Image 1 (tube, rainbow, N blue to C red):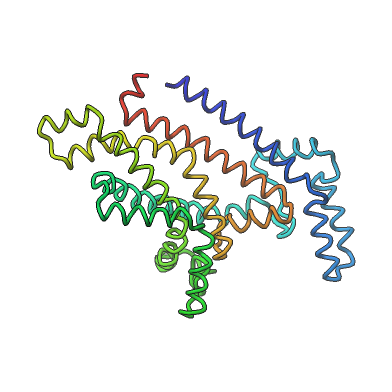
Image 2: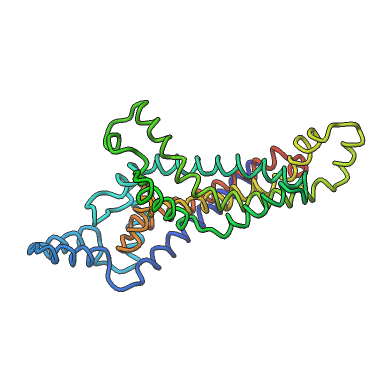
Length: 328
């Protein structure tokens, strides 16, 4: 097992290097760069000394060097904890990420928890009560959820809240807690606002997981070990939850580690963009628009690292839950 973990970590490190290099090249492909856009913005504001300051920044951060040299400098600094500079805000990338990382992780975890709390019970109910009225209702709702983009639902909620209900629907805090220090009152205010973006991002994810859980459980319920458990006189509830669900949930654990985490991050980015949430989503989107390579590249590398670690944890969790995998 130790050799397997070391081998997977080696593959993960190689993948991170490859993705960082490809991301760096792709973001640098369009003409111009972040400093060129910053120079145009400052000149439009009438700043006569902008060209000289921007040129100093270009030399300081090796923006005048060849592409491979710039990548090597950024990669070596990245390993040492220096992720570069965000020129638009004139601040280090590490500071901006540090300010928003905790809220981003909180929103992602809240979305995943809400998704599983909704998808798993409904998927089990639909499989156990196949073709019932409840199953047909949940199937229809799941199809609607799969066909509704998260950002569109966010726009609808934003319109209803602002135009119809005349209420504030953006951000994760009320105006009085936005710049306040952390306290129990601020945490409670966060929880009152957190469920809205979590529910929006949950809609599509829960609909997909519900359909997968239903199909997997239907297949598992027809297997011989389930019939044997029923023949021993076990109750249907015990057979379903202690035996069938334990096997049927394995593909969902794989999806959680390899797809669900980064897919939730991606869907939350669009929702955060619409609702103006203080997370990494809007920061990352602005970085792509302004060709802020250091911010965009750093966020992409962190997403890939999350996928690699999540995939490894999913495999280890499967080995712990399913004895057949341990034997293999």
